[in-house]
Structures are given as structure tokens and as C-alpha cells.
View 1 (cartoon, rainbow, N blue to C red):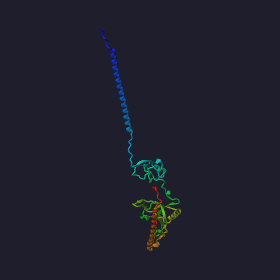
View 2: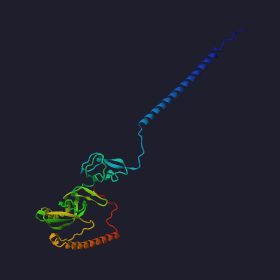
View 3: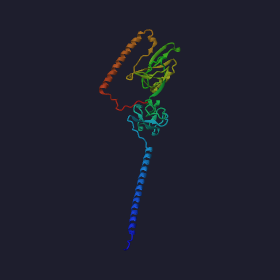
View 4: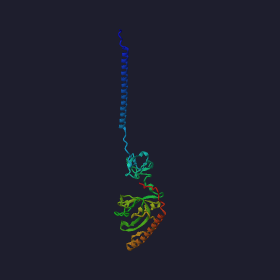
Length: 314
């Protein structure tokens, strides 16, 4: 009997198949590992990017609602300098402070610094204005400004210390004898004169504002050229001095008042009372006239009212 030959070809084919399957699985395993490595690398890169972004991120806080933009000076500004956008910047400021500060640069471009402004100062009506507060700006066309030394009565202020810029006063002139032994007379020389400037420390009460001059002061008045001429002449009268008395802003009347001559009254003091009684009656009549005029204006409506009043100058 013939001996059979082993199926070497079949065995080899099986071995090759096993090797091929093993190689295939190894390849797939390598591919999966490479894929996982790529995914891991991508995740790591993404984490790094997120971490970097977080480190560079700017924390944005909520803007409080109880603030508003206010204009502040970016540099020192001298009085008289005209403002441009380069002089200020906006900063958020609590609403409960600086209520009158300017908030819109367009409102004040071209205006003037009315006093020295330091860097960082808020811009308000107290240091910024449409025009410069020079005395020449306050004089009415055709009028003149004159400063007169006003006698305040030494330690006693004849006006009570309550005259301020813009008030109206009457000017009186008192003459006295050589050596100031006795007063000759006192008379009204100008009435209803506009006060441009009163020097002196300010004084405030619950009802009034004013100044309390110490000693004789130089008050600046607005007068006509002819009045200025007469007043300058009278300043050279050796034995005499000016005084002023405050008058109501509602009263613009001018009266013919006889000079008070001491010699006419010292002999009979009852004349002073008679004069007082007569003037008191005149004042009552004037007060009644003003009251009636105001009632008529109230009934007709005030035609001088404005819906957008202009704020006072600083």
C-alpha cells in the first residue's frame, strides 16, 4: 500500500491565513491607537486654548445704574482759555454728587474757563461759562463803571451788610465842617444806582446773603458818563463822604428829597418826626401801588416767564 503525502500546501495556506488575520488585527489596533492619540492631542490642544483664553479674558462687571457721565479736566486750564474736547474727558460719577456738573462735551466746546481749573476737576458752572466774567462784560452799553469809597460808619455798616452785586442803592453825600466839628448836611445825589461789585467777606443767614465790609470800602457802580463826571468831581471835595442805602428791587421810583440840614432840625427835633410821618405816608401809598400792580400781573399771567430759564452766571 502506497503511503500518503501530508497536505503541506493546505497547512501553509492555513498558517498564512492566520498570519494575515493577525496582521490585520494588529493594523486595526495601530490605527485605533493612532486615532485615539490624535483625539487626545486635539483635546489637549483645545484645553490649552481654553485655559489661555481664560487667562486673557477681561472680567466685565455690571455698570451700576446710579451713575452718570461727568466731564473732568484732563489738564490744568488757566482762566480765559477757550475749551476744546482735548481739555476734558468723561468719567462715570454717582448721581448724588456734582448735580450741576456738565455731562455733554458738545454743550461746553467753545466756552471759557472762568477760573483756574486743575487736572481732574469736574467742569461745572462755577469754573466754566459762555463768556468771561470781566467787569466790562457786565456794563450795559452806554454806561460806565466807577468805584467810590463808601463810608460805612466805622464799626457800623449803614447797609446792614446785605448789599450784593446786582442790587440797587441810593447814593448820599454828607458834608461837614473844617476839622469835622459838625455835619453841615446830607443829601441824595443819585437814586436807583446799579451795584456792579461789593468787596468784603460774605455773610449768610437763613433769609439773606450779603457781604460785611470792614471799614470804608470801594464799591463799583454803573452810572452814565455825566453821572461819572459829577461823582469824580465830588470825590475831591475835602470835607465830605459818600454813603449808600439799599432799596427794594421792586421799587424803581426816584423822589425829590430835600437835603437834611442839621441847622434846620437841631433847634426843633419835632421837625424830624413831622418829616418822618410825611415820608411814611408816601411809602404806604407806594407799597399799595406796587401791590395793585402785582395783582394785575398775576391776573393777566406773567409774560416774562420762560420755560427754559437761563441759569445764573457763576
